[in-house]
Length: 381
Image 1 (cartoon, one colour):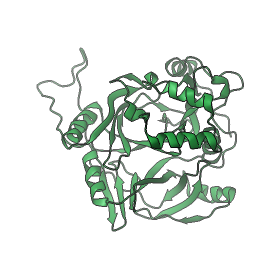
Image 2 (image 1 turned 90 degrees about the vertical axis):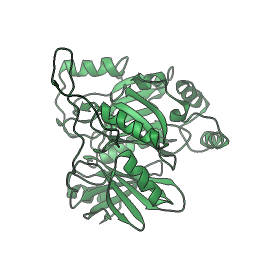
Image 3 (image 1 turned 90 degrees about the horizontal axis):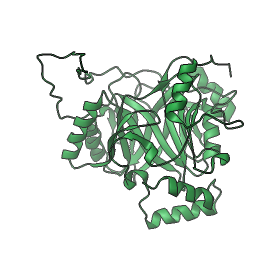
Image 4 (image 1 turned 30 degrees about the vertical axis):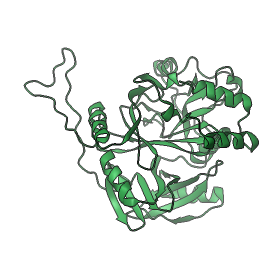
């Protein structure tokens, strides 16, 4: 991998001071691969199966998506920004997460990836056409890398409100009345996953897809054992990108945690949240502001119990910002906002959770009793 420019001292220091008690210690994970196979440009979409596409479409429109295409077997959802669809919902007998797709920077990257992984380049069934390479990460989750032949055109979006700040008066002789309507989704921002093989999966995304780490979390008192959570961003050199496009943490399961969708501003989040609440949907946690990534957030459950997030005002980092290191804790998930809920954390006890935990301790995973107790302690509100 080519050497990236050294970040200005104030940029590196600001990142360390805000995101971690201290930077990396000698010998700790560098947060990037020396020579990745390719460098993906962004996340493209996430895929689900659901038995009721009509119900899924009603929620999608209430949450703020537009429909890019609908067939008897699939629903493609999009945001207002030009680009690819950001969610695919396929008709199936049960509700489940299928996998994720990342966007290749160039068509030739698909050929390079296929050669390196012993796979092949195939047609992608995305609206407008394209090509794809299908992979499995070490957790067994499907990962597609795609190159779309055509971009969806931009749609009209919500305008950010003009705000007055102290003596900086930008709005005079005009009232502020944001309409209570769906938050209009702009784009897919990131995906969060849980895995029982965290280190193997993390290294796979760095080595194969060329992602880099913005922040690591470790367990209090177990830092020498390495991180248990990482926030990945895409490497576009000097071009600033989202603080994280993918986040992943160690846990007893291998599954989807949530996906996050950018909207215009805080008022779009708040008004859209009121709209969702009036229609009987369940808020999982929010409104607040995160620490890692700094996004203003609001989390909801769709009718199939999948968690989805509205967010605005996230951090943007270029490739020269080094990873931050911080202990994992429930209280460290937000700068401000209501207390984090057990429902959001997924720590409500149940027979299914207990069976999952016992399987993870017995099977080929990176969990052992000490790590499990550390995770339970960290995720206790």
